[in-house]
Image (cartoon, each protein chain N blue to C red):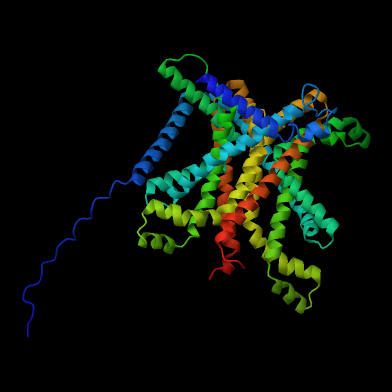
Length: 267
Length: 276
């Protein structure tokens, strides 16, 4: 079984090595920065920075579904008829929209560590527990994202008239199908601009995870800057890479926006 | 002719059916229970770990950190507001050089993390120390506080320029035309007619921007400025007491909630003439 997983991991890394936009066979660094500080391999920092790029992008991509699903359910809870549900959802958003992201990250990173440590010692495992930085970052960013996401989705929910639900029920669809077939497609269309902004914020917030030791873009360029003493160049590269990510995601979002509007009447 | 001889005796309404125990109610109770357990846990943690000596040693430094945070955010928001005015005009200008410069500026500062910008200014410009010394600017860039102020000012200027541009463009054309028809000079028309209406639209985004700056300012702790977060990290690294973060969280929540309520009041007050 472990052999299978190792084979899958190897195949995945080989595939990523081929399509790697920075250090792959047709990567930017390996084509244009052969004999500079950015060369790939042992002579330059290209491959380290490429790894950071991959970590940042995968952290943001891994956080997105967690945050979206949690945010959707929190938005549902906020418009529920049940008072306790509304109250607990409101506590959640007030808390995580009010705390600085960096503080949330620290609280979750150290708090999870303490919590797991206590649980493990209660079970009878005495050793020290180290929480994975990627996991802690994913949880912290996901929590913040879901708090903001629930507000965006809530206002989108409010923009959908009651008649849409009623029409669904009149057609004999039960609650889940009404939600899935009638409300959700409209919800996505209305909420997409807000969610796009949140995605950009999420992308930028991933830089904070470098503080708890995850080798993302900022940490890798920071290490390179400290070793080579060329801080300005390397941090400028970090900025550039984030701009590239922002540009790529704006392209993707305009594509999705066109796709969600395909059912609207042409004007 | 028929008439009623006996009236139905008055009686109590039928009892309300018992509230159904739905899934929503179940989850609501569960989540509320989780919050309650968490708050009790945190309260017990604070009570059990209460140490007056620690409190008297780190309490004042928390307050001074809070002062640093508020000063940094206040100064950078004001300076950024001043800087955002020409930027917003450059963005709206018909001259392609100006509008492209403003667009690139805004895109850069909104597209990259604040932390990266801070590193670029503090460590990046710090690597040009000999050139900066020759220019006589080294005293400014040597200090992390100044670098943070510069970065935050430039960053918030980009965001505020976008807010201002959106607000000014939201004022209907008829207002410009009306002012022109009254013979008002362009400058007077802008400051007396357009800007007041634009600022009402911009009020809420400005509030959000200030809150975002307060939350974003926590990152200056990484470049050794002892703001609220910096003092928290110092206290934590000396005591390894998790409470350090909880007190900081309480203070941040307090400021943000105060500001949010203040802004809600301000908006209700300033838009009372628009109520129907």
